[in-house]
Length: 185
Image (cartoon, rainbow, N blue to C red):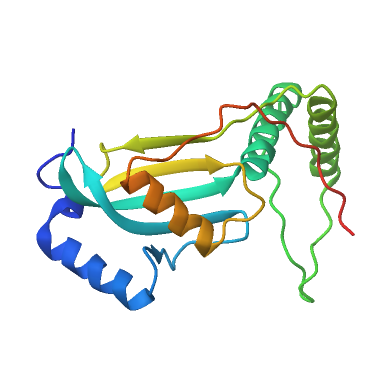
């Protein structure tokens, strides 16, 4: 249930976002503070929640990205159990902008995690499917999190998603998918 102090439901904020959205020529505006990519987008749009207009704070990503994320989380968890002195690997740049070499422990942890990921992929142990999660128990508007089985999260994909979400015609694919890491060319 949305709380009354949530300004994402207020007329002034709704009017501000409507103006921004109209100026953008789309049905949404990107969150400029986030790093959007071909596989991930953070944006705002206007929709209804429990019969009231609200600003949706939305994130959409490809199932491939979700799959990779889940593989990495599992590998990180296993690394933390396997290495008592585990710490997240932090990649730093040297004075030339190149990635600095990892220390021996970080390198060993990285190799361990890569092996876990390869094993999980080979066993098709992680499966993902299209989903939309909505959460009104947030400080601003309503949070929306969606994974879609598309190659790219383009403005066209986002516009279609918003239209179908707002029209209540969105059909999610219940198929479970697994992916293989793509080799860089």
